[in-house]
Image 1 (tube, rainbow over the protein chains, first blue to last red):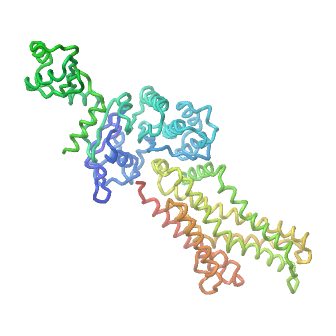
Image 2 (tube, each protein chain N blue to C red):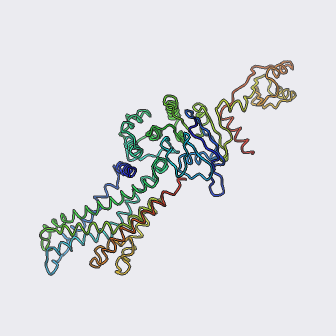
Image 3 (cartoon, rainbow over the protein chains, first blue to last red):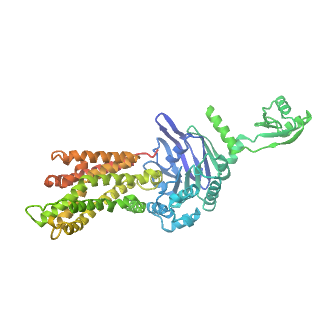
Length: 302
Length: 253
């Protein structure tokens, strides 16, 4: 079951493409990290998914139901926070939730539940203008949860948060996705954060989706680099060139071979036979950050 | 309809602790204080020929003219800007418009609240007028206010003033919702009110200018009363429908 499915989703702004032929597939129950550099079209996509923008071409389905500018009924399954949380600073946290509850038609008990879930029960009667940024962000998520959504769409939810706030938010999202089975679709610049929380990732560049799938699939597709720690990295580098590999000198005693042509044990044997002192030899998993930059660099070259 | 009721209840919560809410009693109170001060300290003459009902009407008309000419257009301007500003300020639209509710409902609720607040303030003025008259009776008995206030006349003119402000309310509401800038809404309102000072004095064109229409309920012996009431209700409703259509078709980019 797909929580979000788009086919050929396209939206232009003037002559410039916001998103082009987007084919998102977000499995229900997943945490989907939506990545891309500034201007890639992440916010445009999110606004299309919330029917805040008209789609120019293509189709959006939320849990199998068609969503469009005119057909907004599937939004009943969605809670959202786009960039900064939409809060009334002159009202208390509870009153802010009350506004959304009245508009959404939920039960009054949902307010206490949402406050407890985001850890704001004790501050519920304080005016929002007195809240810290992290508290506002959590209240924004509580607003998104007021409708008991099956899908949570969050655009840059970590914006402006300090490290403690980021950790809190991560724990909250993990709780929501794990215990409650809510599908979380989030865009973020913080790749390390997405790496820790997301089961699936989508990489958007210049309005086009360059990759989507699980993090494991992404790593498999790109292969982990071979890292060799040795006494004399320059001479090992020369040796590897002699073997027909394309090594990269990382520092005085570390060499990386991003995509080895020979088997690892064969490279090791050749280097030892040629008298190189090898201290450590093995694959180092790509970080999501490295993969992201590789993908977007390839995308820019297209 | 249930969507609109829900949106109106939400508006009620949003208005807590706001200047908007305070303005409803404060604006007519300012008029009452000004009128009482004027009649208490100025040299006033008993209208001739003396007729207590005519004196009451003259007194009430003085207060309502000040309201309809100056305070009502400014009140509508400020209220519209403040009500819309609640949503523009914190970029609330992206949250509201992503709710599974027709877009126009949010705008309709705003216009309803603007109408309700204008009506409440005007009716409060109608209710406060006899009170102000009683104070004037005590401090300036020479003016000749006596007997019971003309309640029916006051109620009729209060309702007529609200109806005559229909176009003004719809226009200011639309401008405030359509443009995010507080300055745009306030500038339009102030420009309209200032222009109404000149245009409203013309018997010929005063009744056509939205910002001077409420004043026409009393101006020129109320000769244009029914025109501004009917135009306010019908054209005001038409502009409100246009405003809902225009706001609801706009994307939140």
